[in-house]
Length: 290
Image 1 (cartoon, rainbow, N blue to C red):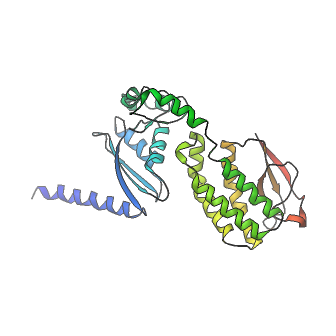
Image 2: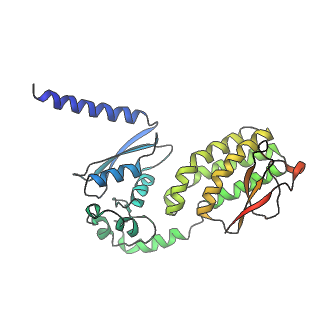
């Protein structure tokens, strides 16, 4: 009879995990080693990796093993582990930035076994641990840094969409929004810089949603309404990612029924996407992003 309470507890825990996992669609569960020491580490690791209705992390401080459950259509194991690395914790695949590790509480500063094994060092971002070829690891990181900016196609297609709205061309705007959505879906989050990655996780859903809405209609008024919200998210991303040339953040006080709305442009001269030829020059540049 004394074993019943323990059994009840085990069943309760199992049910809670099952219910939690049920809230995540297209769920996949995997285990991976994440280095840490204590209960404080457990709280930080799980908070860093948990994404509402997208990913759940359950870390065991005794075994150092984490159970990752995530929506395979919205994230990957690598993306979750990178978030955890940015919080200061090494895993079998990613190393934490030295600065993030050094900022951990003293009791949380675990022995960096993964870093010693990989013979790698990093100052500003979590990097993949290459256990199979340590000698070529630095060359791999260098090559990755020289790849085309993951976000440039996203910005380029946003500007193309903006130009279609300036011309009051609903058909072209729909096509450009479809291309924008395609480039958003093609972004490899694991290749983003740490600050870009954090902002991308916050704005990604909105970018996809508003781009899709614009692509699904040729009604210019509806497209412009969605473009307003799309531009807010794009601005947050542009602030951390930057563009190859200065970008001008512009504002029209007459848009959105007099509430005002912003947009991004590669040109300082105002060409209003909310009114087109009706009020082409209505607005002003309020910020230059360099």
